[in-house]
Image 1: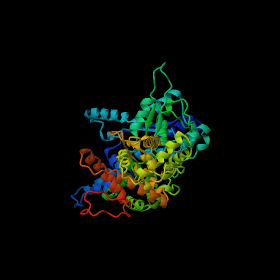
Image 2: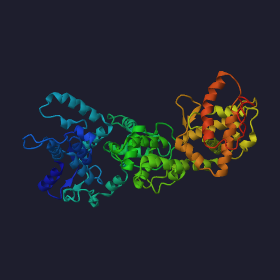
Image 3: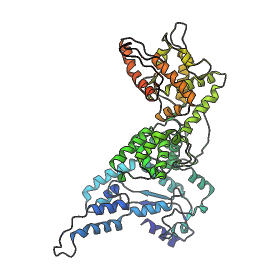
Image 4: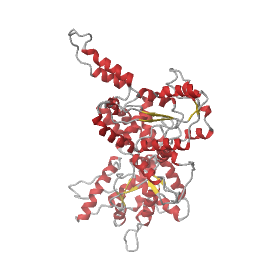
Length: 542
């Protein structure tokens, strides 16, 4: 048993002997452990398997007592509580405790069931293919080979009473300054998923043969809140043994080669992160709460930072996911603008809207420059302030193109050529065709700031993350909101040409979703709608 190993080591080598690290090799999780990961679940199983009371049949014990003995046997032979106790004890001392334990019910295979060995062998192969397990093995082997360890005195690991084992080890004074820096820079304890991008990292920075080029570069990019820093920290935690030194440098670069985009989470990982940050367990949720948890991550656009802070809100308020969802709909701007009350895993994390605001401020600052870059930044703000009133998917320059070439376009509604108003986006060439230069500059810069994303199917189509979409409107003053909304509406209406060609009908399919989004947000409040019987087929004017 792992705890006894520590005591035996101290008795054999003395209390001053330094611990490198403790490696625990488990006998495999039981199938029942997967379904009931904690004591409460095991107790619940014991109660569920009890049979209905029977009359005594002359036997020494009633059959009804059997589940109690089974539960007692399971509790005595279960190794997981010891593992969790040690894990908690070494929580603040990274790389002091490692655990390898097959997770496919190995302990349910009895010694005499040798015919199941092939099943066990295949399960072991699958277990070792897991990126985190593979990285842990690499780390263990690397530390053994280099004779590296935490150098923690054995008496600091053993002299912990049973009452203290519930608390993490406090003997951190013996750690060197460099080790304390490592502790501060570890990834969030709530880190979830991201196996695909971690595999990309692993392949990029795999160990190479002697004589091969040792230098490899990889720049990751993505919208604020997507978890770029946490992915990098997690990779460092998993594969630290491959590197002699790890340096963290806060810097900006103009290089655009060897980059890797960090995207939103998939729904499974997003729900798992929400459950961990809210300190809830999936098996304790009823059916409606599970549906609400999926609705919450969808509403937050699968953005890790937003999900982490949402879980913090649920945990602190001790509310349901359904309650959070209702509050979010009513108080979205306030809940996403202030991270001080619900910071998530780390207190220094910015508010969700704060990460987007940094990009806006950078564009706004550049837009004041009398340079080509300043002109492009101004166009980026113009595009952002129009597209945020449409649907966040299928945003296309075709809307601007068609509005610009409409001879009836109302330019008075679109502002002037110098301000943030959208009029310059509708400039024409001498032949009356649309001059797309301003639009292309703007949309390209928004892409580089990760505020919009190009469609994989159509070069001209873009999408905007749902929270960026909301933030761009929520940040506007009331007067600016009204002006930009009317301008967006005017451009959308002017893009409609009353024709019966197939191309026109195809465009109208896209136009409908943007029109609906505009109307749903009050974009039709000051309109006088046409009477269909009087002006059949016409779009309303602005």
